[in-house]
Amino acid sequence: MKLRFLCIPVLSLLAACNSQPTDTGTTTAPPPVPGPDLRALADSNVVQLLTEYGRQYPAREVLLQTRHGNLRIRLYDDTPLHTANFLLLSRKGYFDQTVFNRVVKDFAIQGGTSDKLALRLSRYRLPPEIRAEHFHKRGAVGMARYDDEQNPGRLSSSHDFYIVQGQKLTEYGAQSSTGRTLTPAQLRTYTTIGGVPSLDGQYTVFGEVVEGLDVIDKIAAEPVGNDKWPIQDVGIKVKVLK
Image 1 (tube, rainbow, N blue to C red):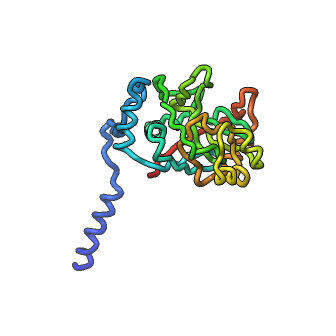
Image 2 (image 1 turned 135 degrees about the horizontal axis):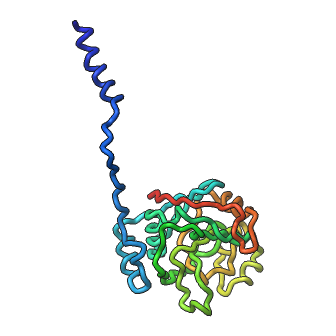
Image 3 (image 1 turned 180 degrees about the vertical axis):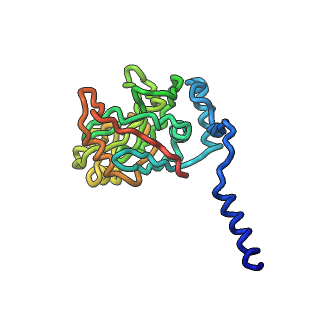
């Protein structure tokens, strides 16, 4: 009797675990991702909406996944609009449908768009957050923009970002290629790690790769067409870490 008494609860538990739920024919929709609707953002409201979003849902690291490996990116605190915007697009799943669409070896890899977009954005731009301490070393993450003739205010794109590959330079080569005076630490970085100092002061750098620098080189080595788009797409998935 004791043996039967002990076995009955165990068998009942296993039966409950192995039983199949009744199919009701309905599915539960995933909860909505917090934050403003991507189609509601505009030049007139982007500062207010992204400032509020950044305060409510802060994070400082993302993982960008590709078929060549992963890039761990740290986002800067002192570029709050660009950081909040990147987090918003990442959480909403926008980047997960995009690719690296412009690859220039020894310069940079650019992503954030695709010719097969299902989730679309409104047309908006980000005010510049250009800071001298954030420069275009290898692994720097910045936001693309139109040139000064079309965009004298240097407003950033809402979604086209780039990651610097660059090259190692001499101190003279680094200093002569930029329109500003580089600090000793920046000169040392350009000569030992590399980068593209000619971009300094022109674009907003809002983060940097802290793991996976070799992945940049692998993507930069992809064969490309005349438009610099890789012949075989390099897809992007972005996960917010913390």
